[in-house]
Length: 348
Ligand SMILES: O=C(O)CCC(=O)C(=O)O
Ligand SMILES: [Fe+2]
Image 1 (cartoon, rainbow, N blue to C red):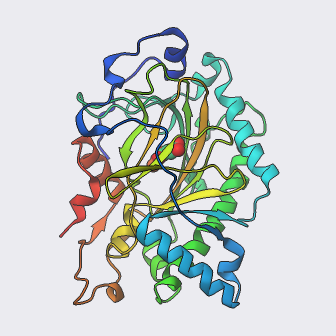
Image 2 (image 1 turned 90 degrees about the vertical axis):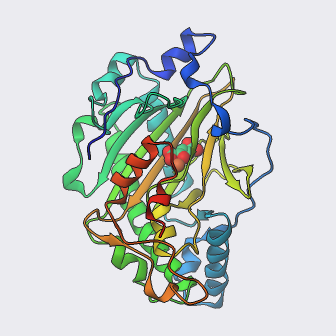
């Protein structure tokens, strides 16, 4: 991947403390964000019970139908019974909070290097016109394990690595259950999505830290985008909302259910499902009072694999929408750089 990333010396966390009027480059322009309103209506998505998806009962059919309907309208839902206790999820949140609360010099030990994606830093600047997101991030590869770059994995707090490792193992299992259930919900063979997803799939994590922002009316935490993954898992902040989804040109906010994870599909599932499942556009709004911390985990198909609409989902009534693509994540960045929606590159 050949991406030029501009070096930004200052973290947003420091800016938030020292600067009353943020630089212009953070201000949303034109149609970038629409009206930045945190009081929009709630997303109306179901809570899916992972246990029921795999049980051979009639409630399983109901659960599959909930999943199908949520993914073909909103592109997201919340999951419970995912194998992790509330106590463990709190621990995942706690080590992230402890990391971002460290002195800057300590966090900078894990700094992203120039022209790299992994590590601690802020929004990657890919073009001159880009609006910069009001967020600092820690970006890590979780799987395959031999691709982990431990130099970027915090050793402070001490439990960080072990907690993240456990979280990864758990999500890997849930991801497989979901990919199977998604196929089942469309009356396809269980492995239909998994076959394209591949054995050497990539899992990455992005910790997002949003400090209080003096201009929530003009500045976004994350600008509108859809994810380049197959599936994204989001552990939300326990107390502070901010995430919004776009549907029929209107923004809706996601409620917090502290023991649930928010799941959304990314562009690669929209492509494989021939547009039946929607990769939703979403953004994060800021607020002037409280920090917000989230953890997004992206499950990304093997970059060697070709991704395309499943044969069974291409019919006369629903012609093939997308062409075959390989290494979609690279394509994603090239398009993103030009301010376009990356999935358009895959349209026929
Ligand atoms: O922090 C959030 O609520 C969402 C972050 C997000 O959309 C992302 O990291 O892709
Ligand atoms: Fe996202």
